[in-house]
Length: 58
Image (cartoon, rainbow, N blue to C red; front, side, top):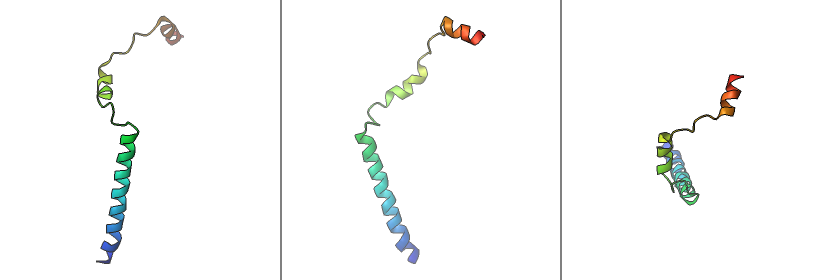
């Protein structure tokens, strides 16, 4: 029973920290653009230039 007197305040503290982190992330704009990161994997990279090919050959 004494352990509950320790665990309940710790869990409440962790809850407050998690809520604060979520509010901080929303205010900093972490959730503004959720689509672009998922679409970045579909974009082809540009073809290597002649200078990059020459550097690779050396």
